[in-house]
Image 1 (cartoon, one colour):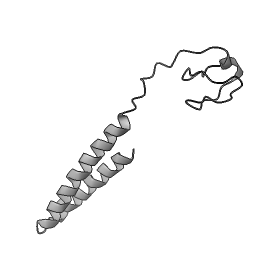
Image 2 (image 1 turned 90 degrees about the vertical axis):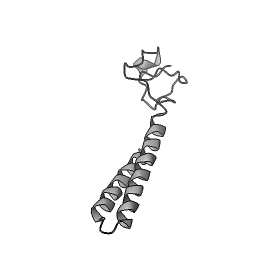
Image 3 (image 1 turned 180 degrees about the vertical axis):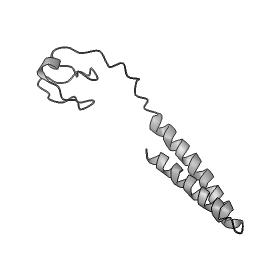
Length: 93
C-alpha cells in the first residue's frame, strides 16, 4: 500500500505512513498517488538558517561590544543586543 501524501510504499495493513506519518485510509491502500505540486522539501534549509543566524548573531555581538566599549553607547549596545537575539532565534528554526 502507498501513502496518499508522499507516495511511500508501506507494509500491508499499516495505518500510518512510515515516511511522513500521514494516516492511510482504506481507499489509499491500493495504489500510489501523485505527489502534491508543492515545492520539494529542501533538506539544507535548516543549515542555511543556522548559518545566517550565526552570522547575524556574531554581527550583533560585535555591535554590542562596540557599544559597551564606546563610552555612552547605550543605544548602540541595545541595538547590538537585539540583533544578536534575532540571530540566535534564527539558529533555532
